[in-house]
Image (cartoon, rainbow, N blue to C red; front, side, top):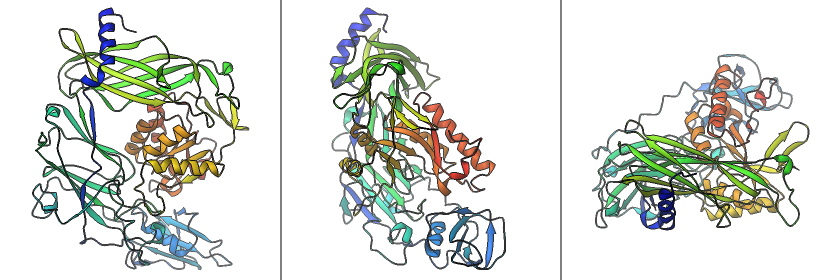
Length: 574
């Protein structure tokens, strides 16, 4: 709580008028892009020449079983779509010498003569070329400011250009028989004059698969992971300001090497944002943590047919404040909790902070009481809002509000029992659900946010209450729907060994009450290249588990994976 009455009065005034003085402004950049396919690229990445080495009637060891492959063709394609896979082997079964029908892929240390096996191999794949570090308009004029894109197609993002292609039997079956490709996106936009001298970020919610980004003819960065959001600080990117000044954003997308064996599309398939923030102090990306629990589980009032469960609860509120101005900053963080647009208690929660010029961030944490909290459940998906306000001393100890973020959260208690299963708020709940990929018929992976509600409701109509995000970080719009509609979620990282992507996933998603399990990986994606149960793969899994537990220490969620080889006495899994 605040110790200064004067600051308390200033704070109340500022909270009432925060919309006029707020430093953070977010602009959506989804509309009016120019688009052009790069027709110089190869449309298919799995041809007859992909695996030049014949391995028929040989059995190779150290490979991973692929249970979903049901033919030699699907076995081959599952390996073709993964650049780390060098060998595929298929046993036809039905009395053949190799045994039961099965597919095995990966990297082998040795092979021996053994009748009945079908297979092929290829040499180690060269690493992808490094992204360019500058816009060379001689080689790639499309990245330049003055490039004429008037004849290009105009469209809005999210957009999936692969789903717009023509089905071709030479393309991969596992990717929907649709050819891969590369493409350019260009967008001109203005930034208000009053945004000058602020910190400016460019945010992409998702680009499939790899992307290179230019702004005003300058290379600003690249991203190699199709399922996770990414951000660039573009404050020093030679921006121009004012309604009549246009900035030119160019994104080159390469979807020719999908990191999966399912349809994953290509393009800027999630939202794009421009965020303007106060350089002296602003809330970091995913910087708010709103973790809650009931005070006494034995005092939970159970839910009924007409009312939700309730209990006194405590919210652990934490916020990371950034300073990009390289100056000393003193300020106050003020928290307030709302339920159904009403404040939940009369107490005011705040804490002072300081960021020295040699630092860039400061973390403020407080415990906030929520009396008689209405608990989140499948039948009663009650949601609270934590409002986090940041104020700084700018002139003679006068507080100025510079940032405010609303974070949705829910209060619930989750537990798993070895014998009786899952419990939500003390009630035994049978989990019924499916692993759902992010694509949708006719749209590919570029789904409108409103369609997520439709998908969740259809699952509920089937009797489902749980959703596994197969097999990657989902769009956050899906998690907003599962929170709001009451659907349990198994939230899955894409590939073991991708620690940075697991970190993004847990930071972004940890405040969603619908998530009840963190997942490290799925099936063969748990293999880092040395075998699923190799020391290297297990070490990588432990590292991701540690990341989950570090950034979500009180979220109550166990860490799992869809990997039977890890179900052992001393498993890395919970």
